Structures are given as C-alpha cells and as structure tokens.
Length: 218
Image 1: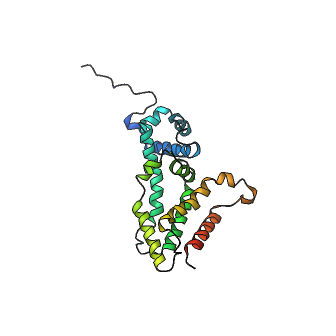
Image 2: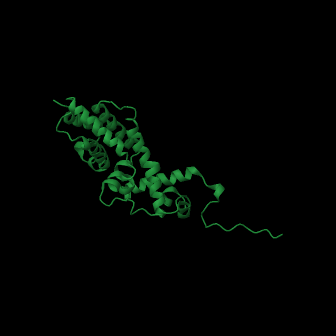
Image 3: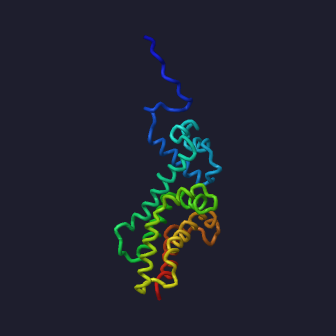
C-alpha cells in the first residue's frame, strides 16, 4: 500500500498541534499596542508580526483576516475593561449616585494605568469620526448600565443630593471626557514644564473634585 504524504503547509504556519495559545495572546497585545500608537489603518499584519517577532503567516494562522483580528481586540481586550469598569456597579441597585460616579472614575483610571493603550485607542478608534472600532463598540456597550446610572442620578436629584441642572444622561460621557482624554494626551502635556510630574493620583483627585463640585447640590 502506498502511504500518501500529508498536504504541505504554507511556509511559516504551524501544524494544528503546534499552535500555542500564549502566542495568540502576544499577537493580540502587539496589535492592540500598535493600533493605539499608530492607528488601525496604518497597522499592517506585517507590522504586528514584526512587533511579536513572528512571520506574517503566523498572524494569519491565528486571525484569518483583519475583521477577525479587530473583533478579537474588541472582545478580548477592550470589552474586558468595560466589564471591569461597570462590574463594580453590579449589585448596587439602590447605590448613591455620587459614590457610583467616584467608583467609575477610579476603575477607569486604574484600567488605563494597567493597560496604557486604552486611552489613545479609545480616542483614536472609538471617539474619532471614522474610527475603525466605533461600530463594533456601539454594538457591544452596556447601554442598560448607562441607563441605570442616569436613573440613579435622577433619583439623587429628586432627593436633593444632585445638582438639578445636571443632565443625568450625560454624566458618564463627562466621566469619560475627564479621564480618558487627559490620559490619551499625557505624552504631550507632561512635556510642558508646569504640568510635568502629574500622575494618576493627581488626576483622580482632580476629576473627583470637579465632578463632586458640579454634581453635588449646594
């Protein structure tokens, strides 16, 4: 009997039993960092491969195409942070709105400290008109949590705790603007002598003070 040889593999592609989950994680890390620094449109599969120290064929082995890679970055990187930020509000159905907002600020800044790619990626690819992650994020954001926060703020207004001039539906957008935008531009403003040396603690105190002075009723 003639034994047929296995079909040849494309150069640089591992056999199925040689695939390693750690390498997939490294590729996602490399892609996410490059997307934040250079933008998705300017980042090729070749650049991701070079950043991770592998061949482009290896990137295609784990991520068949660009759309699959972008979905993985959103689901396995960005949405994990979204889950962490909002996860702290689960089980706090009747929580005080001021405490909820402070918690959101703390978790956002904590996330950005541990995942420094988050602020520039969010500003470049989600907030920016034409950002290539915008539609993916809009289809995945926890709008029920956003609505719930707005309702808690409205409850605080009726109780006389929250400034009645505040628009409840814009509170979380204000939190995002006061945290992620300064962090996304930190490389620039930290080069300005009067601002050099400002870090996470200073930003967190500043944001909480601004929000509490504006949110709290007087």
